[in-house]
Image (cartoon, rainbow, N blue to C red; front, side):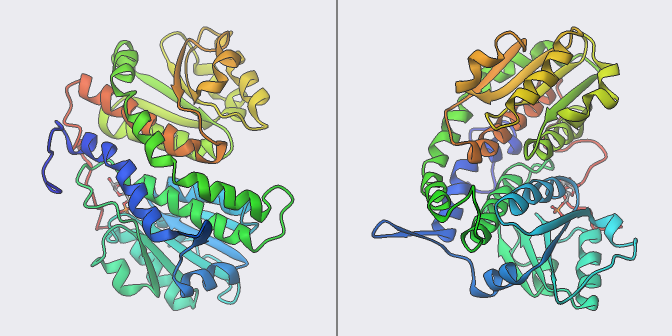
Length: 373
Ligand code: G6P
């Protein structure tokens, strides 16, 4: 039943539900636990390249670009390595300055066939920069041409809007950052702390399953918003790339205008758009940024904006007077919250598009794989 929709009306909904299984697959390959001792299992060549890099260039398009941007936050804060993330069609033509001795390129591509990403891969090879491709398709062009490839193990993804591949990409970003963090002296992320995160990883698929149960309530919640023309997705820190991805998904399949914004930038423009006819989806986590996020949301609230928060249940009290609706996630360590909030964002766009009667799996004007520049 890997190719059919099974009990689901759309591939996208099926693929959203497959995500706990994808994480289980990845954990089986990437994390070894013997006699209570944990070990990250990356191929020797890949881990050597990661540790040698003084700068990581992440290059991708679309949803894969957002996974790269998410990776930057973790790789820099935990892995203590400088990271620059670029859209392939920009990188390719801007005469980038690279240093083959210090740089490592990570090219993220679900299909392994995106023309702009492949052009960048070829350019980097010419320039002598070592590369790792992160892809879902083992026989793809990117795998054939790159020095090294790692696989997302998500199974075939048929919905045009990427879901399970994105989730697998962000799991890889987590693992790369944790692998680097283990070898870096870090005041906040000691090895003991990193091992406790790794141990918690095994609990995550079950919490993702719990999050899948939110689907019917999210459908009810978003119903009144489907006729509105525009939406905003807000996030700070590593939630900002997720906000961008939430907005991209909604645009792609529901044709509702959506923008992702870092909450701290509200005052610099988007606040002018806030009204009672623009729903604002806000990713909230319990990090040290919480007071700032609450401050940002109060500004939206006081201008009659409709705020829907996506936050762990532990923040319910803090959000009560600030937001109009709350989507509450199961209790989980802050590091893992993105794996649950991503599911919620996927449901928001899936249900809005489906309620509008659109063909969720085959949005107009878009292709699963863009093989021309
Ligand atoms: C297309 C797809 C997107 C995807 C992007 C990059 O636009 O519709 O879902 O994120 O290409 O694809 P890749 O296969 O390189 O990740």
